[in-house]
Length: 425
Image (cartoon, rainbow, N blue to C red):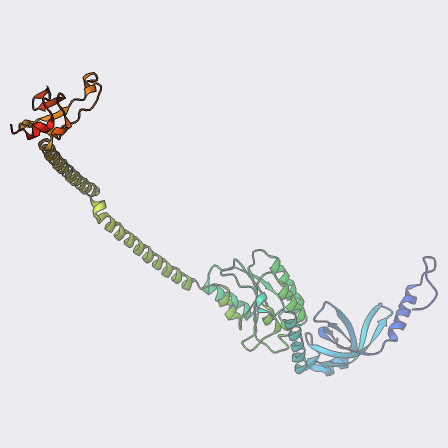
């Protein structure tokens, strides 16, 4: 906007600013805009209809104005909650200071186009990893409290609560009622998700809605809702529509259930089945314990029946008796050995006695020793006296010592030894 500069001393009046804004907006050309109709007001007797067009992926809305006839000609396509494409020119109303889009054409987005846009969004979210199995969290075995987001007094709420209660009567719910179709569905569901995700008592969150057309289930393929589910710290279960229905939130959720009834069955275990399983495990444990006790008792009985434990002193007694027998045998063998050695000593003594000189002398023999000359002065000093073995070993006048059985005598040789050898006497 051009014009004289403004200052605190020379400001523009409101009308001037509004007029300049209107002039600038009027220079904008016509545009095609897509969005979701959040509000349609076409009062009878008026020529202008007022509509609110919101962006499903962001909290942004735009006011539309159009002739009432255009709304009537659109029929069911121009209804709250529907996605439409409009053609119009921006305009700025000076009196209210509001910006709106003056629409001259309104057409509904076709089913094929909706499906194509959902497919494009599906590929985008898949590329970002929001559908990865690795990021999906397991549900708790028995949640303390289940958060349920569904329509007020809906069949989906009844199916989830009744089936879960039938399986586990003490299950607790925190139910957040929201719109499940139309323009208000996404913001309300996102808000309810945040409330339940911040509740520390809620262990799992369930999105439940009955079946419907593609248009009815569009909120559950909304990018904002899908990202809100992906950001939840609490595991989220999707139970939207019937078996063939697969909105995008089914792929983002941690668990997809084909129907709300299945969700009620998957959320909690069956009390009867768990009781039967516990009873079976208790019986198995009892049998295993009894079997173990029986085995240990048999082992103890077998150990106690062994001789070493049945009569501990018997082994000692048998070893004592064996030691006594070995000792007696050792003593007897030693005594026999000593007796045999004593007998051998006696025999040797007898033989030595028989072979010794004393025995020879006792039979009448005598031992003659020559007395050396120096022995006369050296008796008692250990000088050996040689034994005579031949007559020529002594001469006339030599002294000899004659030893007999009862003593010894000294004599002198008369004559030489040779003469005596030839002497017949």
